[in-house]
Length: 289
Image (cartoon, rainbow, N blue to C red; front, side):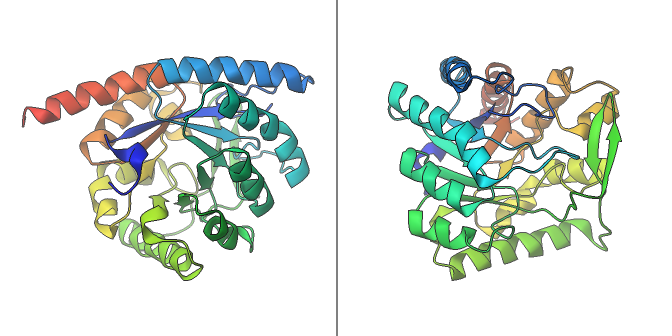
């Protein structure tokens, strides 16, 4: 693999939400003290790394359906001290910053983040692709046709972005992911620095979300590493009829299949359990069964 953190795949990316309104209920910024948020983040980072996380993904703005957008200053105020503290206390850690704002991405990389993870594929901020190119950081480009104003909210199962119409879902996803990569390369981002994410949970039906996992091997034919992020997503809750805090088994099933289908990175909340799922699945695959 062209990226060192993908030497053994799938790499496990642990989600560290520095937000008060994460859909999964795991946000760390539940108090008004930035010092407390940093301390909580350091403890979770330490736990994730001990549990086998290969990457830590730090986000300061919730992307759950119905979430209130925040400005770049607020987002950086949340995540800046956390990025600096983790880089200080855990030298060599691979940090990803989950942001769609170019100014935040630039500051994050300057502070020690190694990857820029954009849920809008570099399209929400006209300066984002150039920021990615300038920093030289690997860029995760996510497919996202969802509309923030077009959501369905369920108090127990969580919200969902309404899925747009597709004539041929997988074919269109492949074309649009290829277009994202082409735009990134045209902006000066090296091909070997591009990672594609099909956007599970963002403007897809439950069946389409499952197709993205079961047909992840088709996504890899594009020639870029693939990130899948099914962890605790709404489609798991709707299929199993469980809340966001009770989706461990459902997530484990998705991660096992994602591993079998060749995902390069899996983005998860429950690092310890999902690292074990990945390890066990790879051991089975190694037998040729």
